[in-house]
Length: 185
Image 1 (cartoon, rainbow, N blue to C red):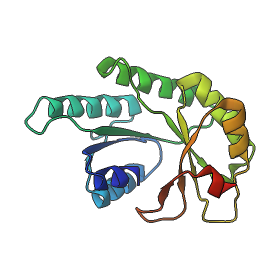
Image 2 (image 1 turned 30 degrees about the horizontal axis):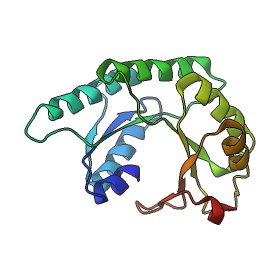
Image 3 (image 1 turned 180 degrees about the horizontal axis):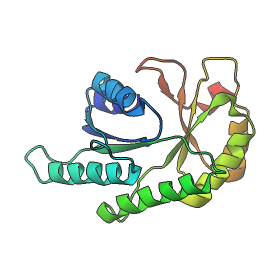
């Protein structure tokens, strides 16, 4: 959905499928990226390491930058969901950031934590851990089209100073919206 927004705004986008854990995740993401008309790179045959996919994606971005097509405006690195309590998965996320920094020492430019609106107070603890471990720069709150009200947003913004960047309100490409605090309240 983010790639679609950026593409419609005239930007060139590469999406890298770093979720090598969930069955069907790469295929699902490839379908969404195709709908968004963005470029896509997934894991090589038999690859299990998300960091290796991130490496391949960053290499592809660098190769394009040196070509006549010019650099991508955005490279979106998708990862699997990671609970803040799983230190091995959090360590792998830190490794992915180090891979990005091999190519872009100042990167990543954004680290968005996607949370389900129904997660409740656990979102605050998750955001706190992610902020400490990988430097979260913003939240994306999904499933706000249901009955969940995501009251945790107030604590995350107020206590942790992590802004909410986007909200998800449905299943179509157009259902990722800018966060509007006044409307949310």
